[in-house]
Image (spheres, rainbow, N blue to C red):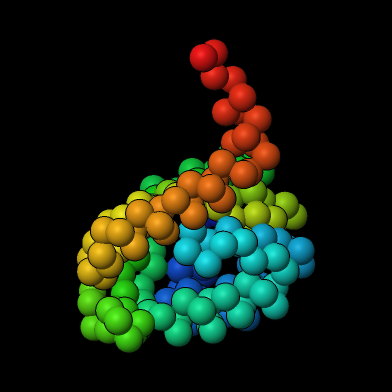
Length: 162
């Protein structure tokens, strides 16, 4: 994928997510593509990706905006920094404003996204939401467990010398 094509995918991805248009977001992915969301987990296939955006994320967030910056693409890999903001609609945190940044990694195939990964400091988001520290610790433990269960991560972790 050329840099200009990748930049266009990022623009369309941010626009679709901002609008809550799951079908447009999912169309950027391969038929069996995977969107690995740091909150909602992995979603495989266009129908599941569309559902995640429309019925999970936009259920929990209003006035959502997502944009990508500093994109880099090389062969079948793309990376970009992102900024996003939203107002929580979760009853417990309703009305709280959140601004977060992240790094996104894209595995690209035939002009589409085969797999999307994001790395976001969820603690920054939870702090802005007003999540209690004990609950934050439980959520971060789940994230850590999911991360450490990844085969690539588990293989890498076996390299400890002591």
